[in-house]
Each structure stands twice: as C-alpha cells, then as structure tokens.
Image (cartoon, rainbow, N blue to C red):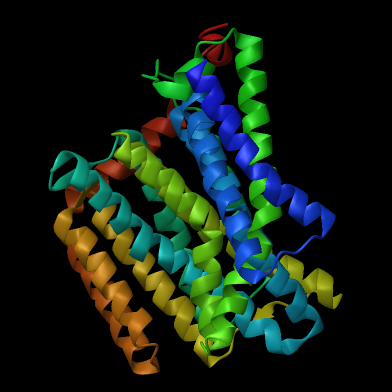
Length: 402
C-alpha cells in the first residue's frame, strides 16, 4: 500500500502542470516554471519504476531504450519547434542546430560525469563497469558518430541524412529487442508493479509510460521557455540560452532518471539509459531537423549550417568519438569522467571559435590514441554486437510471468 501510495503521489504532483498547460492559466514566470519543473521530476520517478518493472516482460535494453526515447521527448519538442520556425524565418536556423548540439554535448559532458560521481559517492569504487549488453549501444553510437563527421563537410543536414540515421536507429532497436530477458531484482514501487498478474502489470506499466510521456511533453516547452525568459531578464545572451539552458531544461528527465538509478545502486543501467538517449539524439533528433524544416518551408531543402554551426557539429562529433573510445572497454573510470567534464566545461565557459577547434582536435587525438590502446576492447564490442545480431529471439519472452 505504501508503494502504491507513492506512485499515486508522484502522478498527482504532475497534474497541476497538465492543468496549467491545458487551461492556459498563468501564475507568473517563476511559479509556472516551478510547477512544470515539478512535473518533469515526478515523471522521471514514474519512468524509473515503470522501466524496472518492464524488465519482467522485455529485455532490459529495450525497456531502457523506450524510457530513453520518452525522456528525450522534451528535447525533440523544443528542437523541432526551432527547426519549424527556421523554415519560416532564416534567423532561427542557427538556433535549431545550436539546441541539438548543446543537448548532445550536455549528455556526455555533464550527465555521464554526474552519474559516475553519484555512483562513486554511493559505493566508493573508482571504476563503473558496464554490462556486456551495452556493447550494442557503444557500437551504434560509434556508427552514428562516424557518419556525423560528414555533416560539417556538406554544410547542411538533408533528408538523405534523415533516412540513413533513422535506419541506423531502427537497426539498433531491432538488435537490443533480441536480447534475452533475465529475472530482475525489483525493489520498492517497481516490485509492487512487477508482482502484479501479467495483464494488470502490463496495463499498469503502459499507463505509467503514457502518463509520464504526456506530463513531460506537456511541461517541457513551457519549462524551457520559462528558464529562457528568466535568463533574458538577467541579460544572458539568447544564443547561449538556446544552446545550453533550454537543453538543460529539456534534458532534465534523463538526468533525473539516470541519477535515480545510480543512487539506487543500478549505475550501469543508468549509464545504459544515457547511452541510449545519446544514440537516439545522435540519430533521430538530427534526422528530424530537416523533416520539420522542410515541412515548414514547403521544400526538400536541407537545413543549412553556417560557419558557427559547422564548428558546433564538428565539436559535438569529436566529443562523441572520444566518448566511444572511452567506453569500448565497457568501463568508465573516475579520471575519464573528470576529463569528460573538464573538456566540456572549457568549451562551455569559453565559447570561442579557436577553443572549439582546439578542443575538437584534442577529442579526436585522444579518441584515436585510446582506440589504438584499446584494440582488444574494440574487438570485444564488435564481437558482442555480432553475437547479439545472430542470437535467436528468446521464445515466449512476454510470458515470463504470465
């Protein structure tokens, strides 16, 4: 009963934001932003519990991929809005790409170190070991990253890129859906849901996913706009707000979801969620930009990249390459997490063309050096991914507790 009450409480705390958005009521920028922020926080808890309970019926990787896709909905909502506006007004073109690159760099440069240090604080271990199943995410991210280096060379993001990146994401989901399920060790509200009869359990999980997704989607845009308006009032540059503050607001569900898992002793699962979020943002989010842009503009033109955005995409691709090189060992150490944050912080604090190019070079050099040093790890990731592709689909997966 206590766990059921906790689930109901979290769902109830999200209702004011939904009512506020649907009714069009306003209490002021600060109050509205706080209400929408609370809905995002409570939705993250619901997602965490539903995802853990879903592991009873589907593979952990697929459950986490679903949550990652739901958690990243705010970023899609915000960035597609900028891309749509860019189709009507060219001055918004840099904002669409800035928001996307900011969101991707925040995930690796801030969320990954955050999760590691929550893990380190809880268990005092200097190395976070990932499960073998996460090799699939690492391989998918590596392929997406290699392709992303072509975008700065072309100077635009086109519908051809959309097709290629969407196909890559579909292949990634297909592979992780074939992973075998294991009997999860559930605690708290997740256990209450997981112990329900099959039909009731699945209906409850679907309801929690749907409600959390609706709460996040409803709250994301006004929450991001509230933070941006607050920043404008404080005299902060609008481009920086679009690139950093808006993505930070829209990435909040992912940060919270991963942090909750790390605090509960499931840091590897939390890291898998952040990896999955990175994969879908570095494939579907990028691919969605020219679709929204083209529909708004009424043409098949790609979203153009100006000189600044070419640098931003190059820097984001280089950071992603460094992140992949680190994770081919399927571990994340304290020094690696620290380096991820420090390099990200330098580009954040000094948003300068020369710094962006220098740090891009540093990322690439480190990625190549680590990749050569971790040749065995590269081979293992490829082997684990190949085995996952060739593995037969586990029979009657959905009936583990039916």
